[in-house]
Amino acid sequence: MQTVEFTRMQDGTREEYEFLDRMEEEYATGLVDRIIDHLRRLEHSISGYRISRLEHCLQGATRAVRAGESDEYVVAVLLHDIGDELATFSHSEMAAAILRPFVSERLYWIVKHHGVFQMYYYAHHCGGDRNARERYRDHAWYQDAIDFCHNYDQNCFDPDYDSESLEFFDPILRRVIARPRFDDPEQVARYGESAD
Ligand SMILES: [Fe+2]
Ligand SMILES: [Fe+2]
Image 1 (tube, rainbow, N blue to C red):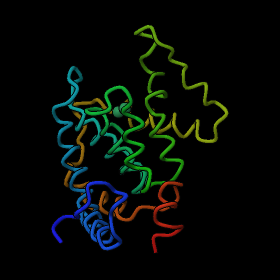
Image 2 (cartoon, rainbow, N blue to C red; image 1 turned 120 degrees about the vertical axis):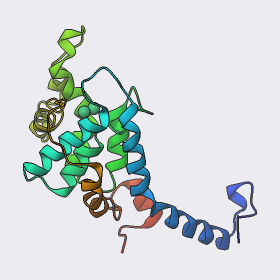
Image 3 (spheres, helix red, strand yellow; image 1 turned 45 degrees about the vertical axis):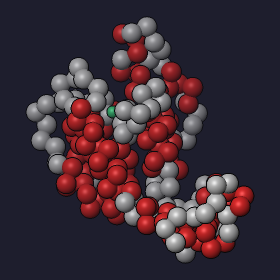
């Protein structure tokens, strides 16, 4: 079978869906490569800073490695701005959505909200509310999000910092982006409780 026959999903057969499952599984094996390709594109995204968005991500991830953070944490830092290009007005949510099957709920939450927490460092200069993060003050991961932004985001625009290359992070990415955790409701509905 090269392609299925149906033009409406409701007409598909079991064989066709088994075939599509295999195709999807094969496609999923290329996810890390697609993520790396997309990170490379950040070399030429937002301008005006002293370093590219890619360098910013590498610098944050390098600081995370050197501070002894876990692989999952390092990958979260590396990908935290991957949404800049396509989700220009909601980049935090896009990065969080990519990470969600592969990291803890805590890291997912931190990345999803890092845009609001980052405002603390600049919003008062542009008429915004630098304290917008205060709406999450009672949240269990409030301080964790502050630490993420303070240690691995707001301070990562230094052209003289000796960041590791994207190649350095390749094996770390492959360890973390390996198998999705099947714990979000949509995935459980589709695949069952466990990936095993
Ligand atoms: Fe960001
Ligand atoms: Fe950032």
